[in-house]
Amino acid sequence: MAKCLDDPILFEADLTSISDACEFVSDCDRIYHLAGKNREPLGEILKNNILSTSNLILATKVKKVNPEIIFASSQQVIWNSDSEYGFTKSAEEEIIKKANKWCIFRIPNVYGPGGTPFYNSVIATFCYQLSRGESVTIHDPTVKREFIFIDDLVDLLLIPEFNMLNSIKGETMTIGEIYFFLTKGLGMHKKMEKCLQYYKDLKK
Image (cartoon, rainbow, N blue to C red; front, side, top):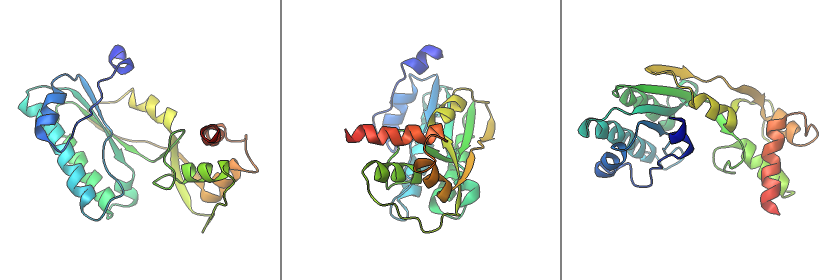
């Protein structure tokens, strides 16, 4: 398994295609299902993600293979269950449980080098703006969010407990604290500092 993780097979086709999914699962011992949309026009998240996850599991049945399935769900299932994204993730979890050997990780907000600014990461957005000398707008610095650093998440994903739903605990910070760690408090939060440095290096 360690060799496979060092040299993984990447899915580069279309998970909404059952034939593509069937071709992919045939060569896999373990599948990390991290794919999915989370910001789209109403209905697109549900349509894309449910079909993709269903095809993945159905493909294992069609090909009569039993790879380990590790699924990246979201704490939005709890935090925002009535949103399309939270609703969809909850439904996907039930689909994943149709596999013979599965593990579900409910993940808080992920941050780290390579995050996409102005998409779904306030930390990536702040880092991008600050690294370019742009002003940062904070509407309410007291708002709290729960975060996990990408390296810490990867460590957890590599030691799954099967046929279990794992709710990952992150670090709770306010928006104001995040801004502080990236400005006046730079150096006090090493993981945050690493993110800012990533965007500074990109600018060079």
